[in-house]
Image (tube, rainbow, N blue to C red):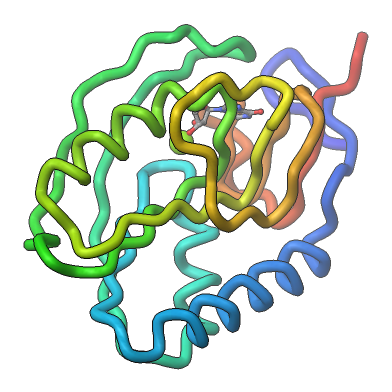
Length: 177
Ligand code: IMP
Ligand code: MG
């Protein structure tokens, strides 16, 4: 059990299981993109741990670049999406994989996907560590998913509750009070 701000969270996905899954995703990507011009676009802040661990197990040439967007406050999606900033890599004609920590309603991903697609990449795929299919109402579901989870609030492994909890190696879910 961990306490963050005013809430308690209980263990949900253990660090070892996350590491195993991330390596699986990395191997899958390494095979699929062996003869491609692979560029990861990681969405900050939440995806930093996922992006870092995933990259370490990629066995083919690749690049990484980071973009930033902010759309979330507290434990309910606000529906507000800010502009995307920070893309400093030419992605036209290249094979792009967006790296996200979690796809919830899909509103954020709609924005990111549309923005990146406007630069005319050769291909554009989405890899998300977590996916909440029951909450999703977007246009672009993740192509690669670490874990599909129920519609519950989680923290750890890059994910925050009001900016804290990102440092946790495992993923924890909100404990009903
Ligand atoms: P969406 O636009 O509803 O898909 O939300 C995407 C963003 O909301 C993610 O990139 C996260 O930053 C945040 N988010 C969604 N669900 C959770 C959660 O369970 N814990 C922490 N952050 C979340
Ligand atoms: Mg995020």
